[in-house]
Length: 455
Ligand SMILES: Nc1nc2c(ncn2[C@@H]2O[C@H](COP(=O)(O)OP(=O)(O)OP(=O)(O)O)[C@@H](O)[C@H]2O)c(=O)[nH]1
Ligand SMILES: [Mg+2]
Image (cartoon, rainbow, N blue to C red; front, side, top):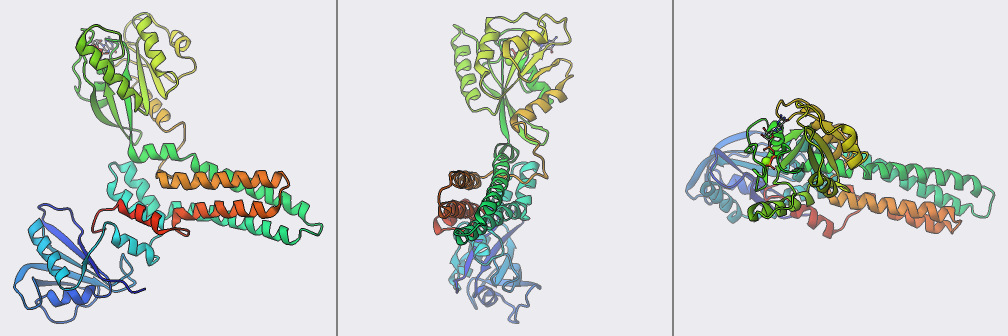
């Protein structure tokens, strides 16, 4: 397929030491060569220093570094030229303009990567991982995106898809033997094979929640009646005096946040005014905000004062967190205990409970571990786990799982094997959309629309 030549500034707009203008397509090297002062040919993978002109024979814009790569040995798989000019939007803008006037077209967002996909340099899961790597906001996110860019998810998904295709082949063979004695044995094998791949697909689907938390991070919200030590807890977790702490009940009014890392997961911890009924106008507004913060938290942190008896306000806190993911914290364990662990268990049932002293800072390790367990949905997920965190991948895996379940039922019910084969085909197609073995322009448009220009 012949394509036109595209160009874009690949570095962020604004002032910087260097900006990079990237050109890809059949004319890339010729276009750039025409603009350079030097008139000898550019050898691929050699770096040249030259003045670059606003048009062939025109006046110099800047002195640049240039190198070229020949198809298919480039990111896009096409002839590519990269120009390093001085950073600053005017310089890089004029270099881009010169390249465009010399015959290139401005690239759409993600168009370089889309060409890399079209030329088989990357599959669709890897292409998406490029955007995820660029957008990563934590070390954990970077490691996840990099692992997918290296192809670990693609390999897992392709293996699953091949298993489904193999099951379908078994099915087709059984259809061909329908008049003979073989089917009984073949049916059992087929059923076993479908069950096996169904389990593997379910295991991949189960990684979504925890992998998403590892990639995106999560929110945890401190709730509890006034004075139990919520703000002290925030400060202890953040390792600095983020919130005001006083012996006065109702100190915290607004929602205050601190970013921390819990077992490699970025977590925003929010301190709140709590949930108590109050006539104070300001405090009531704070309580409203607490409810809103609670609604979109991945984990509630329900704090109780271990040095005082549980009361109606504590029961209201328990009611607010029940039914959502939470950790119960019994604070002020440096003081004589009035509330025992059993009292909290009686209030909240079989919930994760951590006892500590925010004042002394002991027990924080156990608290962090408990938060991580809740946020990662009990999964053992770690950097080595191949997981999914994109909704597009989750939906595809879900569709595959549904079709595999239907195939198993259809087979079990003794319905025609043609129906089983068609469910298996749909399952294989669903998995194929992840790596892009099966795809449509629509899906590609959506995947690449998330990219920045120049990538
Ligand atoms: N002994 C002891 N005192 C604590 C501990 N944690 C907090 N306190 C004290 O309890 C009082 C209230 O602490 P805060 O952290 O302000 O409590 P809060 O829940 O944020 O209170 P409000 O914002 O008013 O709802 C302060 O005097 C703290 O020093 C603890 O672990 N042990
Ligand atoms: Mg407070």
